[in-house]
Image 1 (cartoon, rainbow, N blue to C red):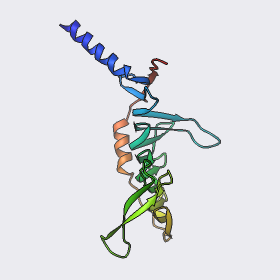
Image 2: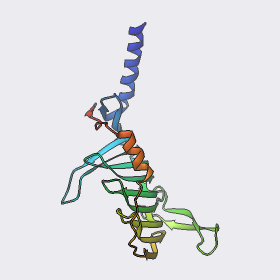
Image 3: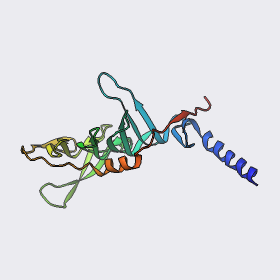
Image 4: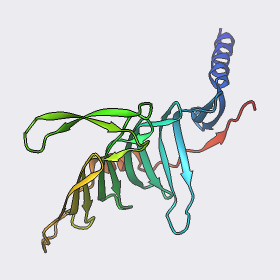
Length: 216
């Protein structure tokens, strides 16, 4: 009975792997960096970037659907520190993306709006700044990239204060404001995403994986 069960599980595993042109296999047997038979990225991915021309290297982990980034992506320094959390829709940045120092302090918040790349024009609901809770429909020509939309905040990672903010509406800069200087110092709490990451990964080693390229 056990041998039959083992054979069935083996057949199921082989069938699952066969749908991918290539993949990487983690030490726990999970597949990463999957590419299907028509060269589309699918599922969980981990991407490594080396240091280039003085720019620090990093790694990012997230999900692909039909060759496009989707949902939450996390960025790590090459030492394993969480340095960014980004959100994607249709392969483009969408919603609020946050970036941290290596010590886990928030240094930048960016607000993006993704447009559906499958449409030449897209429609968005924009809040009327002069009328609370009132929205208007705007038709936007798709330029093939995410647009800045909402408030961008730049933080002093030591004091935790916003030192500058920018307000964008559909890529247009509407307002820039600088924070008033202060001599007050306060203890800055780390963002909850960083705290959760540190708790979850305390004492853990980096995930190792191996190539699982199949076919040609």
